[in-house]
Figure: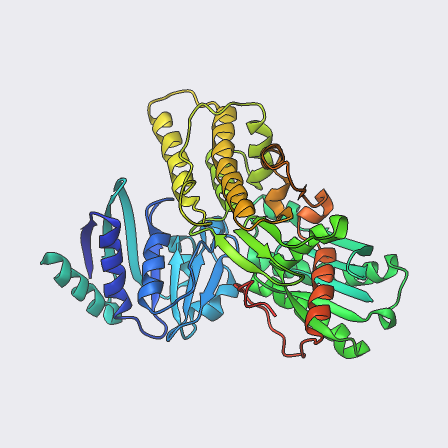
Amino acid sequence: MKINIRLNSEKDTEKLANIIASEVFQGMIIGLGGDLGSGKTTFTKYLAKSMGIHDNLNSPTFTILKTYEGKLDLYHMDVYRLEDIGYDYELDDYIYGKGVSVIEWYPFIQSMLPENILMITFSFIDESTRDVSIEGSEQYEKVIEKISHRYSN
Amino acid sequence: MYVLGVETSCDETSVSVVKDGNIVLSNEVLSQIDIHQSYGGVVPEIASREHIKGITYVFDQAIKKANLSYEDIDLIAVTKGPGLIGSLLIGINAAKVISLNYHIPIIGVHHISGHIYANYIEHGMEFPLLALVVSGGHTELVLMKEHFSFEKLGETQDDAVGEAYDKVARILGLGYPGGPAVDKLANQGSDTFDFPRPMIHSDDYHFSFSGLKSHVINKHHNMLQRNEEINVKDFSASFQEAVTDVLVAKTIKAKENYQVKQVIVAGGVAANSGLRKKIKANITDIPVYFPIMDYCTDNAAMIASAGYFKYKKYGKSDDLYINGYSRLDLEREM
């Protein structure tokens, strides 16, 4: 299942994050795509907030992984630097762990990911506007339907 | 008191012996930079493997160069975070082995407290003190009212300053690590682009570099599309001016508000010549200290020094259940 939506402001990004946060589950994997500056970290910030995580979430690029404790733990990864490598087995414990994984630049490590994840890709339109495609199957269809429903109204 | 410091949070394997917090008897650093350079940054799994290869040798060298044996060591201080989780665990486990075998107490130390204490080795500390911590993973202003007490006044809301340097350097084709390359070219160019100074007037001590990074990248992209000639020196200079303007403005604001007696700059970006010049030119009423180059980058001497003061303050060590953390709050550090 795949849908396309338009976000017209950061408020819209927050709204999207809130919907997804209401549907998180153990072992959920969210892959984020899109260029530098397209809004991946901003989205993750709102997701964390909406998941009840109080700590300030900032870029995990340097350590690749930052973990946040909450009702469900959040594993925030940025695999930008693994572009020419394609995997990092140290991330396995988290990706296949009990929390929610958010993986920025997920296409760079696609070979080590399960087939079915929630893929969210941001495209820069202008300073405040982003087009977003959201794709996934099976256990991810419920949340996509919910987003689709909320954005068609 | 002889403290054995152990640091493996990123791509340097380092072990050091420091007496009483500032007499460095040895500081062995095995850098992996050559290995990671071709990947445009540190690769976690490769870093872990390299730490394993080097760690026994580095321990032995540090003890040997200090002219001591393990029996002489009073405390082991090891970085427990933040950093690459696999890399951290190698240092921690090696430290545990020595701790168990020689019955030496072990204490886990926050990596950033180490960077702050790198300044103590050379210059001592006078309180209250303001620390500007700038590196590939951190950008924060920390207030210290006494030894081993940290109050975070503000921090980056998105990218760390060193990370912004690396990304801009990558776009400009300058390779990794980006900081030194951009700094060098910045000195030969001029601030012609007038990039934004994010959050410079905000009513807090936070930073944000993601928007500036995107602005620089978009500008570069647009110029390429219009086939305009790109002056890499001016790009570097404009970016560096914007970054250092914000860092210096917030540091001055905090310095005045909290009436500090000393400003120290810590972390890898403390080596940046533009930052050094600007901060020294703008803060002249109290001392501003930068660690010597050997202590700007990751090293175990700073961990030994921080561990010494942590142990002195709390009078207790950790047990062998001590763990590593990819993310760790400096203020909850005790």
